[in-house]
Length: 269
Image (cartoon, rainbow, N blue to C red; front, side, top):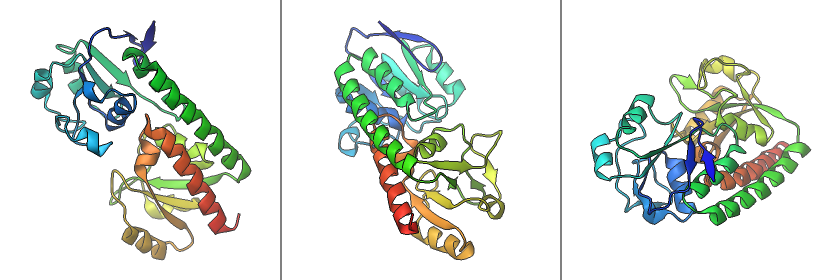
């Protein structure tokens, strides 16, 4: 049996003992959730979950600008990358010495199910992948029930300040929020992470989310902006729960359900 990655490349089950380098934090966490901790021989410095297990895995730098020579010395059988998080030229250079390069690009919450099947199949962890898929489906249904019971809302999700950046609707983040009944602004954008003029961007938003990553918005930021734009509700949000796919998506769906309910209750809906 074979499984297809984001570039349409087919990958069969690996028969040996894999040596995996993950250049994507979400995927490192997923590999460990699938029971592959001892097979992961390299990671980025941003691969921080689960902390107690990744601590002993060698770091190769960032998702961009990683140490290619050190990666080569690890003799990986597989390297896992992502279309958004890794540079195309750096990934292309790996093809010279990496036997199996697996490219991922989840764009919506339910794309996680295919991601579980892909990695579970290639590395012989179908049972673990099936457990994750079942947990995902339960949380998906629970979130859908909450979203259906509440009115949809327009929201602005900010990922950076000075200049201000948001997310377009074709991003994983936006589609995770949409699953909770939150439709992101801007309505249309040629860029996936557009720069916005804050005073204009908040105009139609019922809620403005301040993400914890990549810019680490804090309570002091929320208070300042709430004073500056008192007609809008400013809310801190855990960026990992919204932007990390893989095994984190299960917890992310639960987090969004609870947040949606809490904000609706506080607003009197």
